[in-house]
Length: 496
Image 1: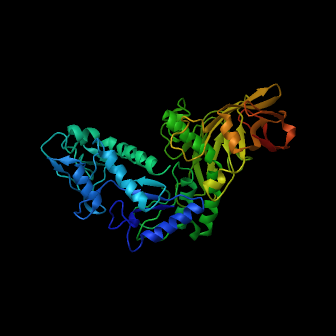
Image 2: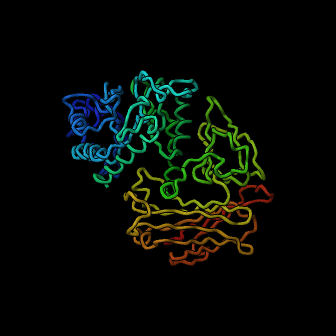
Image 3: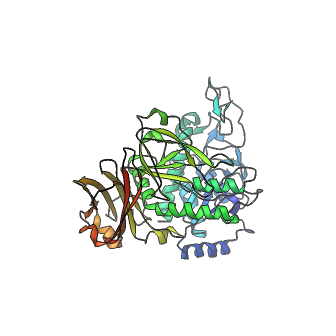
């Protein structure tokens, strides 16, 4: 559950509106969420209201913590009205910011903070000083219009600690605030449908949830003074939401593993197509499709009233994650027109990938306890690979000391007229203690006539022939290189 600035008293950080969000009722509400295995996240803006009765402001002035201009704290304007902005380059900023977060968490035990407005955003256009910092020999391309560098932000001549100009530190502000906020949260705790103005429609909500469900950060979000847009208000939208959010929950192990990769290597979770296909120049200008990781492609419907969507399909065999029997295959990149009925978005997985998936559920806490499924999508040579990172979902550092995590790397290889699926495991004991099991293995893209496979778990203490579980083979479609492919499924495996 997420709450925007409505919870605040007069839009002031670290406060609760005593009328609409009274402390005792909020504690009861958050306690109910926690009992249901859910989390509570509050928005937090950096602008501190200039108010002589506001303790956060008073402590900030005492710590001399705010960004300055011409020797005094720079006065901006955001939601509370006049504000000062914390200087996160100041050596005392983390203790100040962390102290405010701890005091507020002692009042209301939230689980996370949604930091916003840290561009820095400013409702004013600060007048320039006679300086090339405020008057550089260029304009900013802001929403397609050339504007002054100080447009709706703090002036470039503002100074951070150590006389570092805002001009030189501007792009660091969000990162520095995130670092200070993360440090505070470690010490105290172990947007879809976001329309800034105007009303939505049933069709727009339907298509937005079909897209937004596959963003790394996905949630339904409304604003004041517009018609309601909760997903359950229209039967068509509710149907789509169940379908796409169900797939999102099944893909949570894959998404979590991508977060691990982002943490360890800096690789983005959502990526443009050219990240995986740098040799294909046709992908360079595509901005209406994107990849999740290296091999799951999302093709949203962005036009009102559309029953088809133009898509670019890079080379290879691509399988519909909602219906494995539907596939698109190209020997080289190809522009295609896909049917786009109101209830069916397009999410495809490419050959050569192995996805670790779990079951659908109403909360991530429940979903994490469901058995795993491996979706093995072989290429024309019978090969594929993938990995899954597992921990308790609570520890901040992923893959850190203590070995309370497991990393499993999966491989599929062709052997004669068959294929073998095997794994390599780091810190396998953690997954065994948690009793996570692989209950089903589904292989896509096998050529008709390929034998069923052997499943071999290195360090998972299993080597079991496919006949150990129920198995089925279904002829499903055509491969890009010609010939039919089949779907092979082994269930009731119970691999630890």
